[in-house]
Image (cartoon, rainbow, N blue to C red):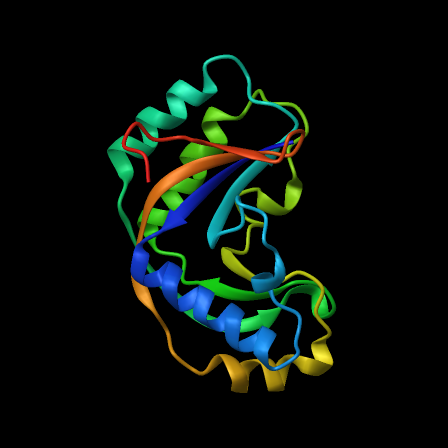
Length: 173
């Protein structure tokens, strides 16, 4: 599997990591416990089995022209009631247009993940992967009610086969 992900500005990254740390300190599930070097706050735009020929170059052109994209985080929710705890991202016209453009680049890619498709996509930053809806109130109290702002400043791809990342911009973050 290959993903297309946006990377947060330093201030948004720090806010998300602080929430990860507070959740872990409270004994709740948290991505703070994932110590893999690729673990960082990010927004997934698409996931496919593999990139079609030329896609990485086209994506780099796209991101180099479009980034940075302003971002405001919204509320913390549990997706689907019993799965990941996430911090919703307010979808702006610029972000929605960038998302659609990524999908255009990957139109011929095999194995699209439907939950990332335009119209189905819920933009978010993951906070914990296995979370019970029953713990949401406590998680929100621990996380606090802030609505951080900043920007998406870079893009990368995660390769699930070897658990590595590669930049999708020419100006590496």
